[in-house]
Length: 251
Image (cartoon, rainbow, N blue to C red; front, side, top):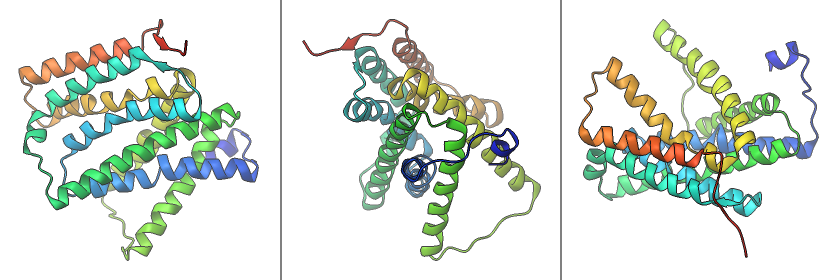
């Protein structure tokens, strides 16, 4: 908001625009993250990463239904190849998973988060089609999303507290500025340019980046399955992002 003011960007939108921005904020910047944290009370982050690969296919489905985007075969095939790659990387977590009561509820939370994140993607694409600028819609969307999550916390009886040590405050600043403002501005601009279906491939890239950082800082040991999985992910991404796309059209 401060940047928008300093840059003299327009912050005046109609009530209808605000309604769609609020929906985007709730789906993309609010409730979906709450559901992820609820899911990870019982599921490992690796399992949640596998479930989140469904964002690719959910984006394809919802963008076709609501935005009339074409279904690109290369995106579907590339997504399937990427799913196999992710499953190979996290095969141990998948092997340990069972549908106990807690795990099943957490699984539903994770699936719900994917559905909301995809809905947020589609709403952002819609808002950009309506010529709503990404930076300002992100500012209002994050504000609305934050208010919604704060309301959930208060209604749940949670106490509001903050750790004042440097490690916590610096990580919070990193997540707020680079992990949220910069990252979502870049991602949603990409979504507007290449479409929600292909931009959904970020769900394949994120766990790979996490594993690279884990290799550097946590001594993660790569296996042959990990390397094969990484190659499949890269193959799927290259296939989906190629300039000449295969489009499924009605005869």
